[in-house]
Image 1 (cartoon, rainbow, N blue to C red):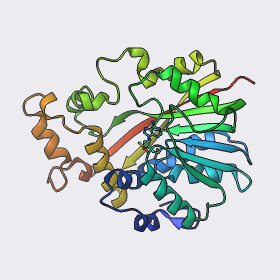
Image 2 (image 1 turned 90 degrees about the vertical axis):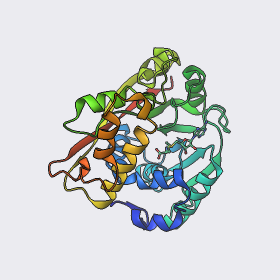
Image 3 (image 1 turned 180 degrees about the horizontal axis):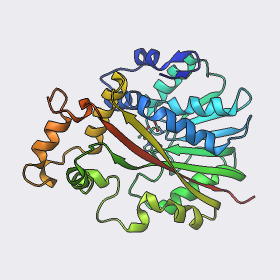
Image 4 (image 1 turned 135 degrees about the horizontal axis):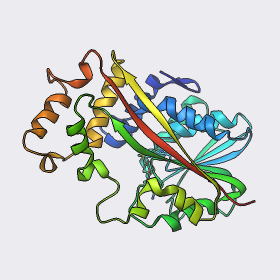
Length: 285
Ligand SMILES: C[S@@+](CC[C@H](N)C(=O)[O-])C[C@H]1O[C@@H](n2cnc3c(N)ncnc32)[C@H](O)[C@@H]1O
């Protein structure tokens, strides 16, 4: 696994309580995410020495990767609404050697606790656009804290193929309420985060651009990847029983329940992927 400053990914486990389910999931999912996150960061070509904001930073793993991208003269602020996550972020960043280059602040992305134009760029992964509130005021708020000419970048989960050979089951799972979350059937199509290019345009941001990154996995799976994929299946499709056709729930259980002899992840030729899409625009100079 990859490194975060002085720490290997495995070292970070001792800094997070396993009973803290959400924080542990953010940690556990890292082996699935790290490579395309690095690709997305590389794609943005963040200027060395720049100041960035990680909006909805969670436990701060990406904040450290972003800090690496801007180098020793750059600076990152991680903002999150969860105080416990920020405490984890601080503890991890401190141990990993980023204490001087990363600050963590409690705050709401809908009302950021910063003056106008204080950051060179803003990054928000799996946070901005996930709520049910109107996207335009949110995008305006994100753009407000970025300097003229600076960039606003939003990364969202966009698709997956996790059950090879079962396209009907997977299509049905994707059509459940959990499968379309955080969107729901009552929302306007324009509110879906895959319409974020329109959000960027409507906010007056320039050069709107979308780019999709792929995380892919092939058997034999490393143990940490296998564990994280099982957690991803659980997270993508919780509470789907009543939304599935008769017999499909049982099939889903047999294919994905840990310990099942038919566990699909353990088939010899298992191959799966998911995608995350980056939307970015530039604040007019
Ligand atoms: C799925 S996690 C993503 C964390 C991190 N960006 C990552 O990709 O690992 C979503 C994060 O957004 C935070 N969050 C949710 N609503 C927020 C809000 N209104 N303002 C700030 N943070 C928020 C949550 O506390 C959580 O840390």
